[in-house]
Length: 168
Image (cartoon, rainbow, N blue to C red; front, side, top):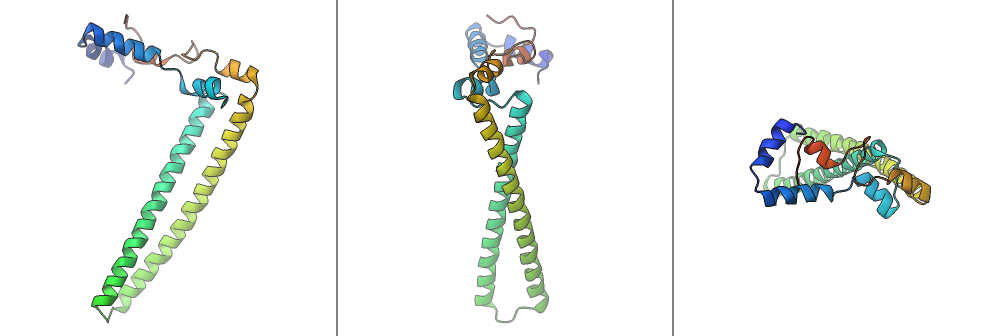
């Protein structure tokens, strides 16, 4: 998506007012990890460490979603079991065995998911604490958050999206 062939024709179709608005919006958007460091004194130590932290946060979110899905499946299975007991007195042994095996599988899955979730939450907690300690030192904040809107090593978003554009 950073391709200038893709981006520039789309920009040329915008009105001059819209182009100016897009250009100003991009220029007002600081690099996220630098903003955390400079503004909130949470310094991850650079883009790579910040990206690692955001990936861990996304992983935590995904694991929590999986646990919620498992909860919903267990709740639905309980409802089905209660409904079946009310309507049928004789349930086949094979069906009971299948249900017992499914319950065991879900229990193993839950145990694994909760273990993974605990590990990820701990890693996030440690990274955040280290970032807060690093951010408590003004020299670290100045070094990491120096060029809030990008520099040669880490270009700003407008230089990535619009590398050859001459927007006003």
